[in-house]
Image (cartoon, rainbow, N blue to C red; front, side):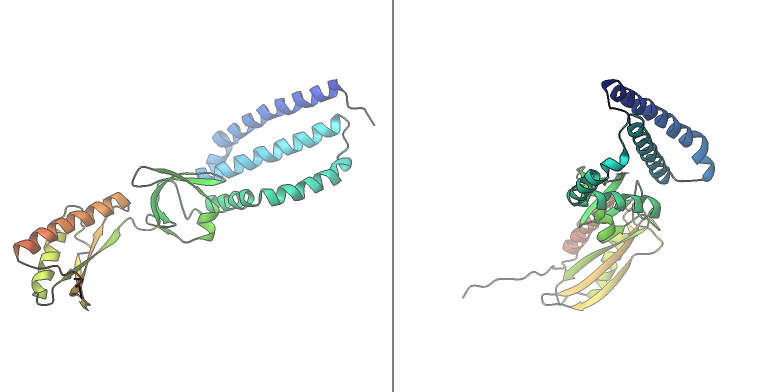
Length: 259
């Protein structure tokens, strides 16, 4: 059994540093020369390269420790006790790490997708191992733990078809001509430049509510961007308000009386 000296410690550090840079060179070689031939996405390439690096560095450290005279068997008990403590402390980090790997392989959410998570409309700008970075319509950058995407419900507006249907509810007074309302709603929808001709806008007469007659106007747009959705809804409401006032159509509201 050899003694651990200052010289062996320096040799160990030099050994690890040299192989760290060799690992980086090897990862670069894999990324540019090997992985592109397999048609693997960038997300999965990232996972493969990161794990390759971790495994290589673990092997280097173990070999280095053994070479300087530190027997791995003597570290087993200590590592085991420390590992239990770390496992409890890093439970959330581990969960997010595993969730990130699942996301990268399943590819249900990708960079550039418009999604809704925890009632937040946003655009995905980066998917990392531990967290995902998104940008909201207010241009706010959010860092969301990856476990949110695995454990919760996520709406992906971009995953299949970029066309999105917008629902615009409208209420008018009881005595209003329902056909006139239908014609006005369709006119406002068809005149908007972002509304698609196919599928065509439709109006549904929902029935009589507590304070008036209820309609739903459904339009389709080709952009899942939430900022575009909100703008189209706002523009159509402005147009509806203008024509309602022109034709004398009243929008009812609840009145509060006093005893």
